[in-house]
Amino acid sequence: MTTKCPKCGSEKIMQGELSSFGGFVFIPDNEKGVMKKSSFITAGACKDCGAVFDISLTDKPNKLTDR
Picture 1 (cartoon, rainbow, N blue to C red):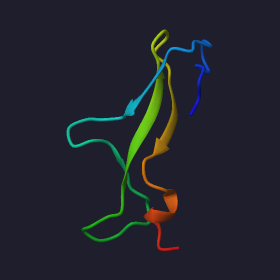
Picture 2: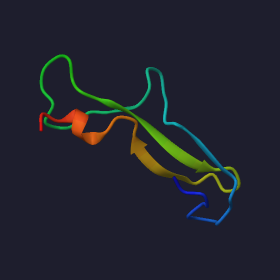
Picture 3: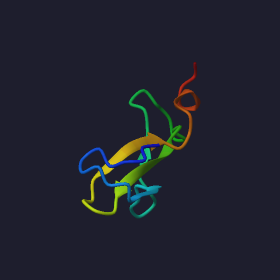
Picture 4: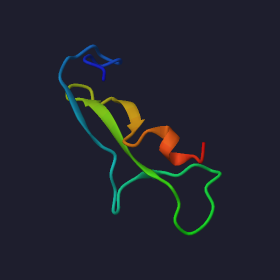
């Protein structure tokens, strides 16, 4: 997690989820079938300049594959 904004250097950072109706999810291109493996997405945001950064999956990437 970043403690300073990469754009303006502010330390006023908040964490949250990227969201819309039903929430944004990441689905790998190789997923097939009706029940696709997916993960919600979290991010950090700067309270001063509004930059969004540190975008990451809430689930570990290896849970999205068969490997």
